[in-house]
Length: 81
Image 1 (cartoon, one colour):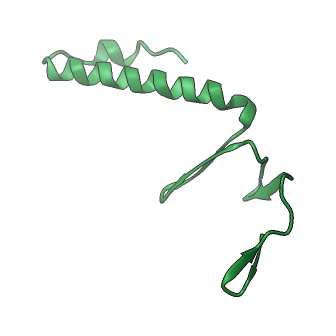
Image 2 (image 1 turned 180 degrees about the horizontal axis):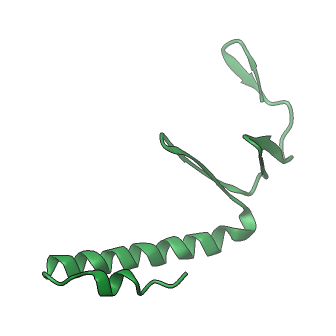
């Protein structure tokens, strides 16, 4: 995509691009916020999402333990990557 004053013009599509030293393909996931950008290759997306869901469940269990007045150290080390 090229800028033409106030509007963008698509030069080509469907081809990989290099962004900040990382090759990004059209099916890859791109997650961005004010802290940074993460590129997840399409062939790893399901695995990355599943790992994120495991981490969230693990963190939720730690919160329950802490709220019940129990040390969360037992739960802290249960997640195996």
